[in-house]
Image (cartoon, rainbow, N blue to C red; front, side):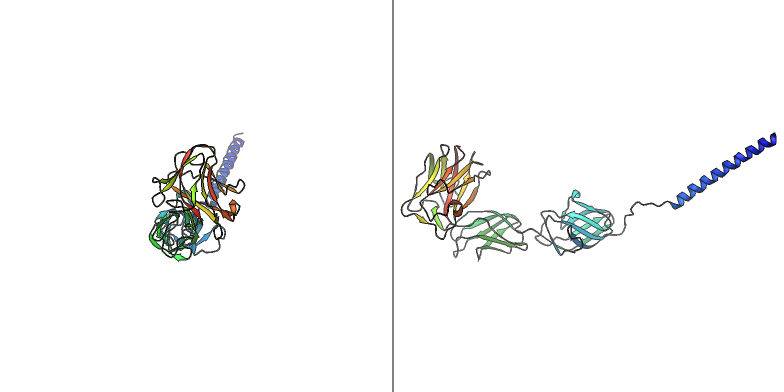
Length: 356
């Protein structure tokens, strides 16, 4: 009896030992076969090889433009801390990286019109890559004054004027008095007094949307001989000396009744439109005029009209150019009317009225 009991105990101990041995072997083997798939970041200094766009990632680029998304290709880029273009750092939210690429958006404003080297800073060093990063083509938003004779200084306002190489009025080169990223000042020569401005930078050439000068003057300091003020439900002061675009006078216009009309009329003969393409004038908005409408009417026509909304930016002069094609292409002009068309009472100023 005792012998059988002893044998049973020994058997159980033997089986338990075997189980322990098997478990030790299993966990030992599992430890030896464990593979760590966590990505290993390279601790070497970064290297930049090429720059590509997002659409064609195989094509290395020699130049890019402010605001572009690009891919910087190289080595050891996984710990990128900062991406700089010249001295301007890309926003943290606008770049991502792995060991061989950095995807980043170029800032929209950089200190140079073309030469803005890329610098990548990682935990383990820096890499610099030279590539042309060009500003966009120049943008001409406005210029003032809208007309003037020889010697007139004109200020062009816009963006991306850095590195300006030329400013022309049609094909005539203009003397540049000063320039910055958003403004250029030029002088009008005696050889030309009207046309379109062209601004050229390393990124291209842009033509102004509105012409400079007046081919035929209706009002500039005073009415041209043969023209008279025939306004109705409106008080028009033609000798106003406040808020003058250029010279000494502008026209202070008070629309005293809704749908009143500031109107100028030409005595016989009417003015031929041959050689002209647009009606031009400048307007200066004052209190409560922003956003109201004015209808441009030639020769009292009720059908060939053009309605515009006054600028919401008050206290500045804005040039308005209305193509004659939008006014029925009349062969002659005997009157021009700027009719209040919002049913409101307000005050504005007009200057440099004529044809181009």
